[in-house]
Amino acid sequence: MAEVFAGFVTGYGMAVLSTPLMSIWLVRLRVESALMAKLLPEGASAVSMSVILHGALAMFWTGIGLILGLALLGMRGEGEALGSLNGPYTLLVAGLFVALGAPIVALLPPLRRLTAPGIVLAIIVFGWLMPYLAEWSTFEG
Image (cartoon, rainbow, N blue to C red; front, side, top):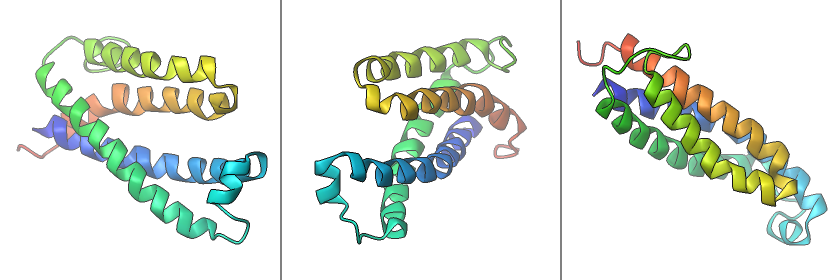
């Protein structure tokens, strides 16, 4: 079960990494969008927005990490490739995030600058780092 715990840890790490980026993006978006200007008025605290956003992102990314941890557990013992301890799992994660993110990048130009680096970061954290964390874990030992 070290794989599932590694998924939780990497998911929380993604939440910590993505919270400041999303917060800055939302504050900048309220200048450009009338809807966001109503949802986040000028006097709204960016810190309180970041706290709420972090809670939501922590739930989202740790959930994704737990699901991918179960996938990694199911693919335990596969061969090394692409600098990863589990090459087929890394390819699965890369294909999953590219397939989910490509329509957003292609169809919504304002979200490109946020989505494309997010996809790359998710592939690195979940696809490459997570098998190493599961291998280094002393959770089962």
